[in-house]
Image (tube, rainbow, N blue to C red; front, side, top):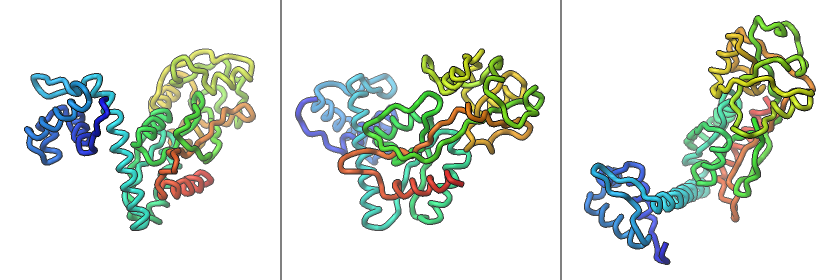
Length: 303
């Protein structure tokens, strides 16, 4: 981009056009005229050194240059929103909005317990939950779209991210889920080696070694076969049908349907670590309410 100033209003306008795919819709959203939007975008494109939108018979879409600038525009706009929320918290106490990300099984009990307790203590803070895998939550945090996230190192580890601060919440044992008529369902505790011939139901990231692979290797075998099912309801359905076994985190045990059997794998049980993640910047920009929520999450993890 040429060394010319780009004002925040132009970035906000560009974001509106990108999200709606239309100058007309963006004008209505931001209370502009359509001609004003066209002029402002043309001016922004001149400062950017080339077209940011491809004009189509119906609407517009970002050019490669526009997509690159839009990523930075979203980051700037999200940072400004965070600054506004932080100032609101400083000047008026705990109020405003707190965007809370979490992976699916954390939303079974851990996160709801913490949000309920936090909401009772700080009713003027609007809590906005966002669900997604840990990697996606970290990406959204880097973009400034989340204030705090609950993440874990399951199924294949958690990469170090210099832009994110992590606080350990709990070490979580993974339990085995069996069909009620499984030959091992009557035992109180299982040895992982007893499951060497089982079909495992999970959806690991392609090409990555998972915790299941690692603990099976310690037990002296490799998982026999895997059925790639990602959603928990689907995993439980396959287990109930006798098509395999799966692992479920202890913090999500209450989500297992009645009738299925939960058992510990003892010393060979896989264990994951659950963390709270906050933006790491200098100076720190994490909202005070986000740091306070970490305490509520730690207390909920201990229940």
